[in-house]
Image (cartoon, rainbow, N blue to C red; front, side, top):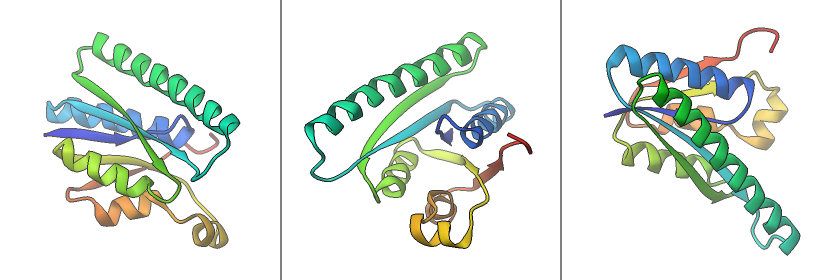
Length: 143
């Protein structure tokens, strides 16, 4: 069983990571940190190259996070998931099941009603779709 963090390099993602680390330590469990990169269907070669560069940068970022946390004595795994726009929640839910998560930690932010309608909410979908408890964490005020 693990503590699973759905991570993005944002204030909300960093808040989720901090809370996930605290929960993993409190529970004596390993931590799994996952990010999802999305790709558009039929993207141009230029965009595909940008996606590959983003993927490499994200993998390096996740590896740095893992190395830092391991140096602090925490058992950590990381994962970079790839999916098309609209598949983020499904990718994360499958990773949560695979990791045998006992807790999912996700960062949340306030959104306008139009923003919710147009973009949906991965956090909301994880809250409703995960087969374990989900801790929703807000970034500190002013960040």
